[in-house]
Picture 1 (tube, rainbow, N blue to C red):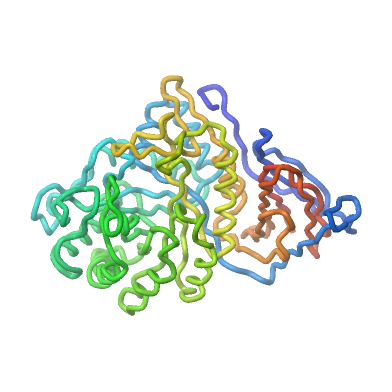
Picture 2: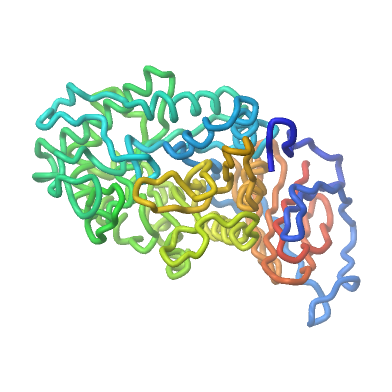
Length: 487
């Protein structure tokens, strides 16, 4: 719990001396970023800690075998997040934003921004309600942008020592542009790609980037649509806009790509899909098979909601087919399933493990970053106009002028704090037995290993670094540990 006088901080990560490593632990038993310093041993001591077969398999760190460059971790500046944060007193607001973005916190590098309303708004709205305004003459940002999004993004940018990758995502076009004439449910843009409605929608993107630019917020990327299947296959009760892979391909090639280029936003990356990994690799193949669409697309966005039934190997398959396109995990949250008893579950360690496991699976299969959903929600898991309540790493109790850092917050921090932007995943072979783990090399030449133990008992670990020696110990039951050392 954090209030105006009490809040835990982590502080900057400071190097330890040669021959030493530092380990940070968060676990079900209650440790949060608990820091210890240990020494590497020049000789292995396998016989002191035994697996059932009598010895510990040693994992080798191989810095010569590299994979993807990691850009970082983050969350979304939704209307709901802004509403909750601004209900706190100024000192508590500051502590919350610091917890995510400052050197005293977990130092997020990604910020996702909904273009106009999402379900995590108090009502449906767009930036242009003037029917037939294909030139976007009446485009205007709303109170939600000026009150709940822009000021908080600016505050996060000001306090962050790391650069923020800010990217925008639309949920729905103005209702008058859609076949359904509604913000939610099934509905696509009227007409065909290349036509006046699709072109007006592309102009809407450019106007959004322009207006935010007037507030000194530059975007790293836009996604072409949040969960395009929501408005095509499914009939959800919240804001949506349907695309097939084919119509998204044509929209990018004929409208969005050329319009951003013409409007001076050619540096803004376009991310396709932004939906479940179930659609991969077919969705990427359909869009990127067209050379015109391909040249405008930089990345592929994936959500986590079907990850339990779709293996992470589809990410590697997609990467192998399109190695020049990055894959970004662009949304995740717990408590979203309709049959979930508690959308918000204060203190749930199971949800922390779920986050950590998904991050390791994603990053182990070429994903370059992982973005959580709402930065902060209330005790109900909202506000949300569609009653689509979920959980969040930070929960605000406005009446008490305080907020709770959920175990999910610390799970994210075990990665985001210690993996610097442009860290490179390196080989760790074999995977430590009984654990989920990955290794990385930071730009400052520090080595990082994150290990997750989902078991109810401690698991021994033995890692060999030919330049340092052996790192040996035990990863506690139900814990996440980050090991770090410098050359």
